[in-house]
Image 1 (cartoon, rainbow, N blue to C red):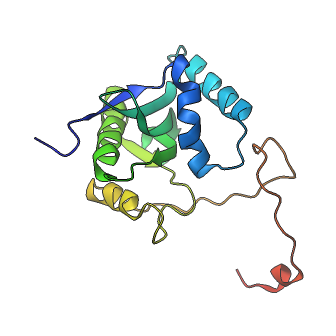
Image 2 (cartoon, rainbow, N blue to C red):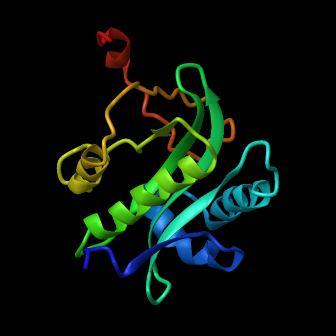
Length: 179
């Protein structure tokens, strides 16, 4: 009997959008509930389009409580061809990180294989690899054969639909810092 027998991966249902909001707030504290609802609605509506399948997958316990989630889209990659692009990975469990994380990872692989993908590209949010912040999440990915392949950079553009990201503090020393 595995550690994660009590967890199951299921697509986010329309009625669970609000239930998942506290989980999302853990990684995006400034996100308003309306923004989350709008984001989720787009992903739930898109699953009807077979050309580019997408959705939000959750990890739930036997009672239906959500312990993790991620959003996904099937895309084309220059290096790997058809891939499963995974973003917004959240796993929150005070007692057992690996159970929900392993269920989440297995569901990613199942989705990717089911859609004929040759690779999974996962973007982990800033801080996922830092000590003290879900230290076992990155370890769970590595244990399942994931490796760093790229570095993704982000430059927010003056409030251009960035879900109200915090404005950066301008600091005169920034200009002098080496890259």
